Image 1 (tube, rainbow, N blue to C red):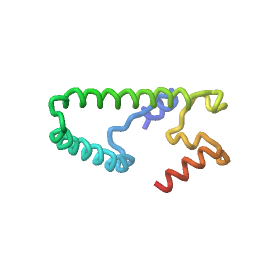
Image 2 (cartoon, rainbow, N blue to C red; image 1 turned 120 degrees about the vertical axis):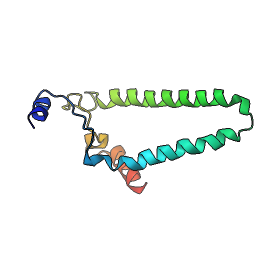
Image 3 (cartoon, one colour; image 1 turned 180 degrees about the horizontal axis):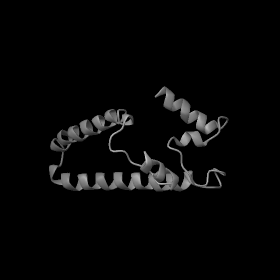
Image 4 (cartoon, rainbow, N blue to C red; image 1 turned 45 degrees about the horizontal axis):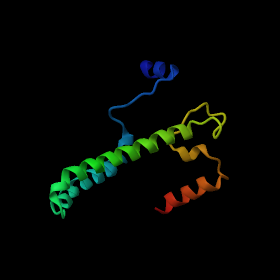
Length: 116
């Protein structure tokens, strides 16, 4: 109602605690839950079990670094005013919509996503 319109007018983002758009995340969450559970037998049957703590720490550290690097570079790349003039640094939820329909690289990524 009134508070949502006021927040929208001020340019604030609104995070809903329950919404109909969450259904598509269930597959991602289920896959993540499943993959975390199958990692235990992999470490349990490792060749050198004394290195399990080190290996887990290195794995989590490398995943954190790769996600952070991709996130930071993606944010700065897609908010660049040189690459996307007229957008005022606003990143769309689907970043492929920021490219034109005649852009070959974006069309290639769209095709690969479709064929996935």
